[in-house]
Amino acid sequence: MRARSFLLPLTAAAMAAVLAGCGGGGAAEAPGGVQLVQEGSLTMCTQLPYDPFEFRQGNDIVGFDVDMVNLVSAKLGVTTQIIDTPFDTIQSGADLDTGKCDIGAAAMTITDARKQNIDFSDPYFDATQALLVKADAGITDLGQLAGKRLGVQNSTTGADYAAANAAGAEIVTFEDLGLLLTAVQTGNVDAAINDNGPLLDFAKKNPGLTVTKEFDTGEQYGFGVRKGNTALTQAVNEALAAAKSDGTYNRIYTTWFGQAPATGS
Image 1 (cartoon, rainbow, N blue to C red):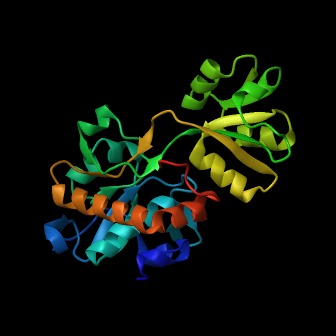
Image 2 (image 1 turned 90 degrees about the vertical axis):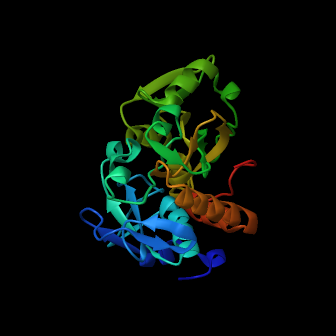
C-alpha cells in the first residue's frame, strides 16, 4: 500500500478486490475501535458504472470514489473490497444494516431524507452544475448563450438550472447524457449543462471540449455509514481532512477530472 501522498488510480485498483456477493465473515475490529464486517477489509458498496467515480477498468474497479475509500482503508491498515449493488439499497441503508458492507460510496448526494436511514461523512465532493463547450467557442457563462442552443438532459437538476438561469437561450432537451455530449461535439448545440463530474471527465478525454464554468447549487456528495457507527464515520472524516490538508485530495481530483477542484471544494 503506497503512502497517501502517492496514491494513484492503478494503485487503487491493485488494492480493490471485487466481490460478487454479500460481505462474509463475522464482525471484526480495526484500529480505533472501528467495527468492520470482514476482518482485514473495508467493504465498500457502490453501483457501477458511474464514470469517473466508479467504473471497471479491465478486471479492476477504479475511480475517484475508490481512491477516496482507499485513503480510509490505509488509515485503518486494511484493504478495500468492493461490492456492486443497486443504488437504492445503498442510499436506503439496507446494505449497511444487513452487514453487506461498511461504507456506501456511489457519488451519493447528502440529503435530509437519506440522513434518516444512514449517517454521512463530511462532504467530499461539491456536485456543482457545469458548462461544457468546444474549446474554441469563447463561451464562459450562461449570459453569452442568448440566441444560442443550450443542451440539457431530461429531468435533471441541470435542466432545471438552465430553465431558471439561461434567459434567451434556446434550450434543447436530450433523453440521456450520451446524446447530450455528442450534440456538443458535433455542434448541434453550442453548450451543455450537467453535473460537473461527468462533464469534467468527458472534457478530459476529449481535448476539443472544455468546462468553462461551474455553478454552485449546494449539492454535495458524502459517504454513507450505518447509523450509529460513529467510530467509522470519524475515521472517514479524519482521512478526508488529512487528504485535503496535505494535497492528496487535489492530486487525486486532478487525476480523475483533469483540473484542480474549485476553490472551497
